[in-house]
Length: 444
Image 1 (cartoon, helix red, strand yellow):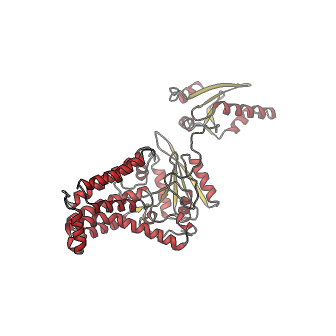
Image 2 (cartoon, one colour):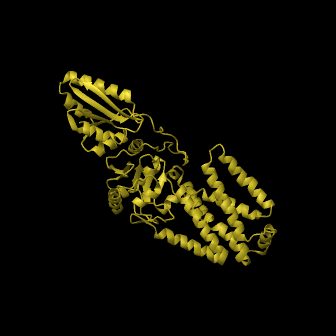
Image 3 (cartoon, rainbow, N blue to C red):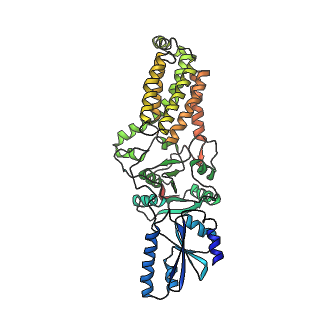
């Protein structure tokens, strides 16, 4: 017994929150092991003692009763240590040194309650959002979808830091990618999916991919909609998002909340997002192309107006546009990183004071300020931070091509972007794929 106990506690005894409590119950000596930072120790032990005292009054088979209280009985030393690190209470018996009883304790409240979404706004939709606790997120999904066909499969990934992952899909979704997804989860059990890059590596997605192969959401209705359309949802413990796979192009423009509007309005909103994406990609490059490469395309009045607005600007149109675009990127990044009390101030300083000063100093033209403001607003209509960031990156490619070969460069850039999206596959499913629809859960 002493050797077993020493082997278990050798790696944990240097932690100040590790406890080792000895208690005598009649002829039996029990040893309680756990972490007091993850459980309410007094409440757990009191409840356990009360139950043992009551049960032993009814039946003298103390040992069998004790084994019956446990969630499971473990013999492997590494599994025992892993259970302790997960916040379980481990009980060792003096006469059964080869087995440990794992009990669910009264846990400390270390997770947020279910709150309204903070990163995704909803209009006329549900206000619940996922949080960092995996069991809570699974419960939200179960409450959203009351169906016996909903399957949840659990995996434990990571070597040094184990992390629970749950794969959710409908039983009728006999899609080939589901088998591939499960296979890769089992084969890459040593990878800790603590971020999207590790998740991509786990799924075999190229490291230099410019587009996210997963749609992240904190809205239960979006995860519900994806499941109904025959897709799979991944939940990762300690990450407050659902990862919807396989990713597809329409995730940039369509969300479930749109269906709360009348059908004509829903169509108009979605076309508005598509138009905004095209504006984000094309407008900065079009400005550079028409100013410096193809001014003959413009009407003479508009050409004179552009020339007048750039009077005194010392830089070429490409440098002028890049200067302001990079400044806007810095403002966006600063507004994300700074506290909410300071972020709006930085946005105001960058958007109003800095822009006006740049115009008055003849560093940029008035028209460029209008164009870049419209571009930034249009980019914000794209659904999902991952998708909007990709579009922001492609915008620079089209801008550079337009500065060299004008309007033709814009066409080449748009063709390249479309070709790149068409070449992307996730788990064998093309990114440009519109075959997912309601009712896919019934067929293979």
